[in-house]
Length: 91
Image (cartoon, one colour):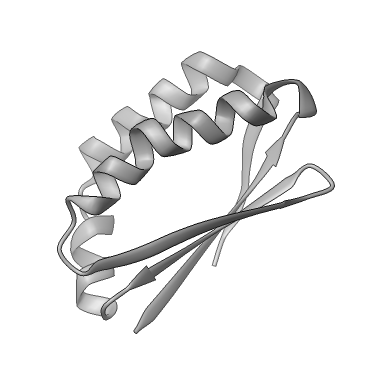
């Protein structure tokens, strides 16, 4: 199993809208990726940690290689939220 973690700074004024964006855009995309197992979001003091479970590292690698699709979703997020949502790190 491979765990992916992404952290975002999420301004309180867009917290609920950002969670809806995650549910409406990112989760459907993830569900289409072979090897995707689950996703969980925890928010604490304005920092959201997305934990994504993959069947194995090759599954994660295949999904991560879809740069155009990922870029389009990142652009959509930026258009909707601007600087109110910022990716802090991926690990």
